[in-house]
Every structure is written in structure tokens, then in C-alpha cells.
Length: 336
Ligand code: GAL
Image 1 (cartoon, helix red, strand yellow):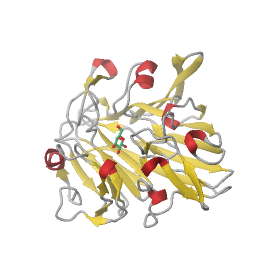
Image 2: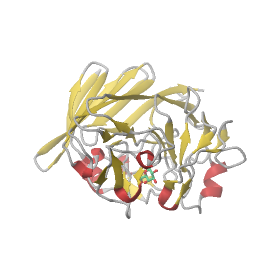
Image 3: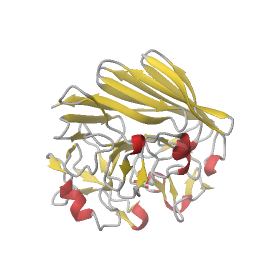
């Protein structure tokens, strides 16, 4: 079932909250940023627990950093020096993290008001991004659908443009399977369907190589406690996990909270997943007066590899004029 109410206003523009519910899952979405505001799944006590970080007011979504629950685009993650070339033409993007562009620029898709269409068990958000938006070529039309089925949330991404352009959409939900206000996720267990990752140099920009996780703290091919990476990486430039893994298995990632008994499995049509353990999340007030800070959530950002447009060795994130960009990611919740 889908229901709708006003969440707040940006100037005179209304921002709506759409709620999708069935017996096993309840998801609240906002038309600002096509954002997941809450996601309730059944825990081992049979209680619906809210397992994503979010805010209570539109002002907090507007003023705080961190992209909590948002749809990120036109291009998720970083583009080095905010420059790329398509068909020999140089495009200069708006930089918003030193010289680089992060998550689509100063006012990326995460900060736009989307229009939407509701169906019984789904909502589709729609956005038109004009030629030159944050420096990207082409008039682009994007659609992101969220649908619930049994205990799963599926996200379908669709876009096309009238010029060759870069497109790489993701969702930036911070999951805490013990509950959104319950503290650090370090005792969660993680398994990744990935034997390789893309190492980075300064500014978290990939070197362009693909390396094995074997013998490193990034080896989650067997289920391990998150603390095994968070503690050694705490003083690394990434402040914890903030790495792009190369998805090889049907299930890209599996996260489990022994406290709630909730296990989440993430699958996707995309070839990369940024595992980000919220090392840059500064202390702030979240939903229901919860205090959020570093390591209190973990993001599973399915994506084309970071800076792929500037790395010929990576799969290309370029979509040609008239071609369709079509990808999906699914999050499934079970009690184990
Ligand atoms: C992640 C990114 C992090 C950080 C975060 C937003 O996707 O990998 O480095 O920028 O978004 O705070």
C-alpha cells in the first residue's frame, strides 16, 4: 500500500513523504533527493525496526552533509579534477571536494525536488536535468523506482540523454541493522561477494588498477565482524571502510546484526559497490533525537567504479545519446 503526506516545504515547493507498506517491510521516501527516510524490517522479536539513518525535518536534509538515504547523481562518487573528455571534447564540472567532483556536484540529484508517480507497491521519482547541469553534457531524463515485494526493497534506475554523457546513479542509505539510533556498527558481521577492489591514491581517487583483497583487511569473502576493518583503518585517510569492491557474486554484500537478528542481502546489476562505514559522519541529531556520529551506519552504494570516465581500464559510465541506462539494486531483509 502507498500513502502520501506533506513532509515540509523548500520555499513554496512542497516536499512529500510517500510510505510503502506490506506485512514485512515499511519504507518512507521523500520527493527531495528521491530519498529513503526510514526502512522498517522485522527483527528476531517480531518487532519492526527502523534500520536506516535519517532526519525529522526538511531543513536538516537541506543543511546537513552526508547524503543520508539520497539518490546520488548524475555521477556517484568522484571524478578527478572535475574534468572528463567525451568524443574529444573536454567537459569541466563543478568541483565540490577540493579539485574533484563528488556525488554529482554542488546541487546534484540528491538535492533536487523530484516529481513522482505512486502505484500500489511502488513509487517512481522523475527528474529532468538540463544540458550543462553541474557541467554535464546533454538534457537528461532520470527515473528511479522504489518497490517493495515480500521483505525486499528494489530500486530500478533508468535514464537517457540527447547527448553522449556520464551517468552513474546510486542510493546513499546508511544501514544500522540494530536500529538507526543504536550506535556503532562495528559488531555487525559483513560478507562481500567480491575478491577484488580498486585501490585509491590521494583524495580517494582510484589508481586505475584492480587488486586482490587477499591478505588485506578488505577480505570479507568469508563473514567477519566489521571491527576487523574499522579498527585498523580508523586512522587511514578513508577513516574506516570507504572502498569500491568489484562485485563477482550474485549477492554483492550481506550484513548481519547479532543484536536484532536482521540480515540484509544486497544484489545488483552493477559491477561495483562502495562500502562506506560513515567515517566522515560528524556528530549530529538524527530522527527521534538520536545522536548520529562516525561508524553508526554503513552504505552499500552500487555503482560504476569511481572516476571510471577517466580510467580506460574500468567499465565505461558513458551512455550514448538515445541509449538507455537501466540498472537495479535490491535489498532483502531476513531474520537469521
Ligand atoms: C561516500 C564516499 C565518502 C564520502 C561520503 C559522503 O559515498 O565514498 O568518501 O564522501 O560518500 O560523506
